[in-house]
Length: 478
Image (tube, rainbow, N blue to C red):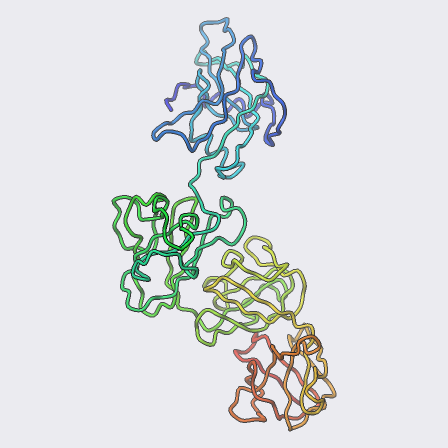
């Protein structure tokens, strides 16, 4: 938009230091006249403005029409501005403002959902200047500007990967599905998928197809909205821009030796992608509100196959996260990394995950598939032959020492183990025994799910399930 008003900067500075502008920062839907009074002139509303229909290269848009008030002194040149709340923008004599300014205001205050028309309350001011002195001659009554922000199409049901990962069969594969982690896709436009490495591929070549663009039989109905490399861009890279209309070639990235997965992230609002080769560590950790946000002392979850599926016990009380190592510097998994969490769990402060009730939980964290499963340990028992292998004697949780305790235990050398939730779960889904090849086992320093019955005898038993001071789950028997 041509800069018509050379004194605008001074005028806007003056306006920001006065009370001349009414506060309409929270627009209200009210009945307004089609024409607002403006001194002895007028300001008229225009039809709703859809910034998605603006022609390429068009830099201004009509937001109102102005019938100028009379100016008594010809030495003063009229200058117009439009106010939305406390924000003031340049306006030409025909009632046009910069497309970029309107888009930025909508984005900053309402987001960029192109399916919602926003109603802005506006006023127009007419200033006059002779080069050294500026005065406000008139201010209109409030009037409505109805506008729709510009944004690309984002499929709320996600995108599917097609490419050389299956020799370009170009069909919808449920496992290759990118989704956001919930909510409006224009407020949360980050889509993610952990792609398993495909043996034999040296360079991955892929595109992303909106869910809406497949036929019922799973074949592609149209390529028109495929996410591709930008036009005339042919590069192999782990990050870059993409095209929304299949205007370019394939998105390409190199296979990395040893990678088990490729963490693919799309920013659907800003048109960028990122790919991170992933080789999972054996452990992740669970710092949070329940233990002072200290990764070095946090519970550890173990991935037996280094496949990104972690299991274990953690004491959780409110907000928490997962860290990749026992520090905050080497990366984390948080609310944004998961699409499925247990019922009642929500986003906490920032990117924290929030668990609404405190306690010890048995967790299964599936990083590649973006899921968390949790079972609260309502009852931890010591069971065995001595009690007919029932729910067992109930242990007490010691929150300070992070262990379950049982005094006056009656276990025998004929076999016993730890059983969770035995009062309500008859399947023995969560139980701990010795990591051993013999039974009864004396290996109380390494307990595993479904392990061997134990044969160590004593009256005081303490179970340390959190792996917060050891890589192993263990117990003591005295």
